[in-house]
Amino acid sequence: MAIAMKVTVSPERISLGPGETADVELTVQNASQVVEHFAAHVVGLPSNDLFRCEPDVVKLRPKEVGTLRMQISVPERGGMIAGPYILGLVVKSPYSQEVSRCEELPLDVRPAPVLTMNVQPEVANGGKVGNYVINLANEGNMPMAVTLTGTDPENRVGFKFAPRELRLEPGMVAGSQVTVNSDQPLTGSEKHRSATLRAHAGETVVEKPVSFVQRPKIRGGWMKFGALAAGLAVLGGATVGGALLLRDIKADNAAATAAQVQPQAQQQVPQPPQQQNPPAQTQPPAPPNQSSGPAQPPPSQPAAPPPPAQSGAPQPVAVTDNIDFEQDLSGQAVTRDGPIAANHYADRGLNLVALADRGPIQCKNATQVALRVNRANPNSTNPLAGAGVYVTSGIPTEIRECNIVPIRMQFDKPLTAVNVYFTGLQGTRYTATMNFLDGTSQAVQGTATKIGEKVAIPFQVPQGKQPIKDVIFSLSPDVQPDIGGRTNILLKGVGFTRIP
Image (tube, rainbow, N blue to C red; front, top):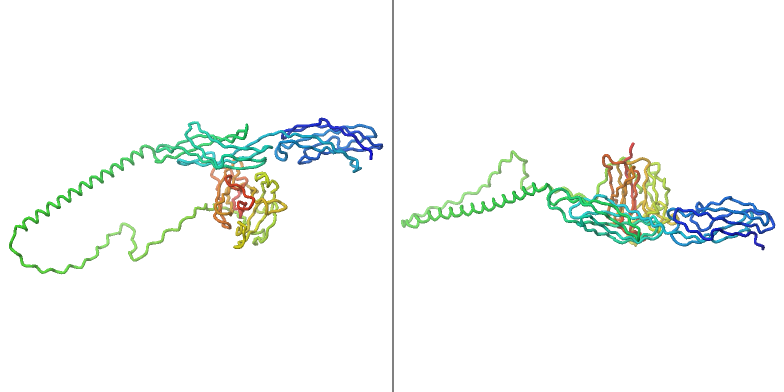
């Protein structure tokens, strides 16, 4: 079959950075013997929205030449990692499927490293030691090997990172636990130390200033320290004086005894024996008058038991609305797995969104929110057996995979209080990030006690603080995601109080 067209491309190669656009011209000659229509599109871009062609269709008579002008773009974030690509420029007739031709266009996507860092809290309080959490996000288009360091202007603060080095693929989020230490002041006022935390990735460096507020070992300053020292001196003096007084009393008693014994030794006349009376029955001492104080129970009565120890788990705050994920919308118990829409709980003021861009690169398709059921089974090897019913994230085609992607809880009105309920394997740490209306955020951590046991992360908005816009529930930054299931997202419910 004769070639129906001839196509040339100009330029022959393009190079683009994220968010950039290149103009490409396709010169088309109708090599057939009939009038033809020609249109063009691009193969190899992550979205058809990344190219445009004008005109949409060009009409050419036999041997006639026309031009199709294209604009080809690279997405600003995500979709195309830095490196070489081959795009296919397809020119075809919209009316005759056999009239088609594809020309290759090499595309070089230039590296554009973008690293963001968030530190919580900005001010750490402690004695000798303070703690921070660093959240890092690779928002560029190339892998990054990140190293964490810390400095302080006085060179009096030590830094420990766990981990210190991280490798972030494009779109990946990870974290590190930071422990700082410095000599704690003995007394006086609080010591404010300034420091800077830095993340290095080649020539890319981001940093955040932080503060470490150290409380003194002895509160109240030198006045209190002096008073304490004086008190110790008085106590020491009283102890020594008491010892000397006791010594003198013992000496006087010994002398008096000797004076009484000496005349008796000189008297030789025997005395008739005296009849010994039996000792009188010893009466128990009368109880002291206790009218000025509370009555004590008689010795025969057992002491009242001590109050039960309070659990170390945080207690939920008071809220007006509660959504239990273990129950369906009709109030019945959930009995089977299944995906749910983001607006499944919209009538109750809640939307749920899986944040696949904040999970590992291998879970970039985990955009589904689902209800899962894991009943207790002593013969099961599943580490989550006994978790019960919970909400998690997953891949739409297989909700049992990638249940580690964070979930955003969006509310129809701002909140003044919230309880996030979860479960997990004992010791697994989770974080609920409170995002406020003014754009600030605060991360609150919780630790799972045992699988199936519900734990609360409570938060009450302080007076004068902006209300909560939404909450993101995720693994804590220092927890390595385990696709095998040991660190899954297991949301059991949420309670909240909305602004009227």
